[in-house]
Length: 58
Length: 477
Image (cartoon, one colour):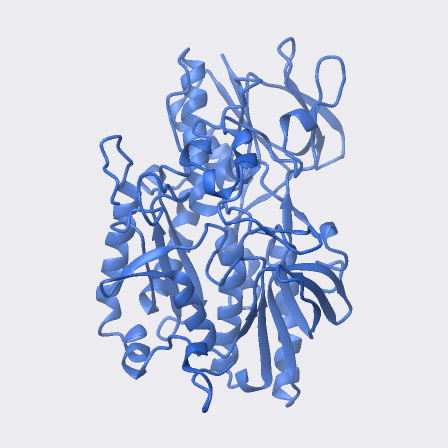
């Protein structure tokens, strides 16, 4: 499977990470902060409760 | 004094038994009946399947844990449940000597989990031509075969690898997703990815559905389907995919499938890891007259019907509601009989059900493993305690009311590995409350090295918890 084949419809392509995103995903400078962020997000989900007073977000 | 019997020692059963013992007065007895000698941390089996972890690292002996907690442990396979009021008991076959025994109960929790139904697809499974990572033994066998694949790749041979689901009604897409990414990562690390042709096949309506109808996340100011990220991840690694497919049969080196579009074709393979369809444990429910009432109490796959709205399935996908899903997991006919984890029958799928032109159903079944199973097991334990104290069950754990987190490994390395961290709230989309089905302030997805660290920490943290080490109850389900 290859993205962005030459001389094909661009509509048949997919989103792929660029060099910065590839670096950032395994960067030891950035990932410790991402780790804290993941923990906060997951804790939020565990503590979340549906309340009858919740309003539809439509 | 009441005797609570828990069938099964997986996430749901073990969690239920531990919480019952912690909360119940010692005059009440908690009994765990399971054919298993060890607890297995299933989320790490994918690492066993590529040889990055030993089966031993994912397991521990149950007997010392139950002895420490004061839980009666019976290593046996449950054959029959006799739930009628006069005398309620189960018939078990002891693992040690094969003797048949009768165990009376006052309250029963069925947490027997799934049976890997390889027979539903001819040629599927370790006795056929494919591998799986559903048990530690099967994962070890997959790892051995994978080693052979590596040797052939190192020798310059091309290898065709197929990963995914092996039946139109299968679930656990997450495990297959993790396995295909870990395998691709490992081959890339070894410099062998070029000669491997890796292909995904699944019954999902689209890549990233995972049996939960997909996930919409808020990212960069946009509301985006996780399909975009799942496809991106496959493209990045050069993995091709087939979705909306039912595997009809597996022969020595071919996977024969049919798709929703009616395409009938086959995939050639050298190594395949396909998750089978699941069914309920092979046990019977018998009434006081000796009649087999299993068909009345269970759905056709053998999962126990609980307080869900099973009539809702016929209303069609567009009319399915959050309220269809069970809350207490109590069976309507027998108030002292509960199901937890995979053992309960869902009212209907979460994903949109599809079928092939010949009528073959192609439906990604709803996952009920891991965190979901633990939460349900915990809730059922509290509901049994309510009954013992003369109250109606007051604890609710509808999959349409609680959220779940999932960390899908995409490569096992402390500095180069990655995982996809996903959280969703609620698990079952509720379109009456949220336009995207879920609360976007709680639902998120991201991938990176931090996800791998999280997955690794969860492995050790949950094994610590399940071993009932000090303050185990502080660790969430």
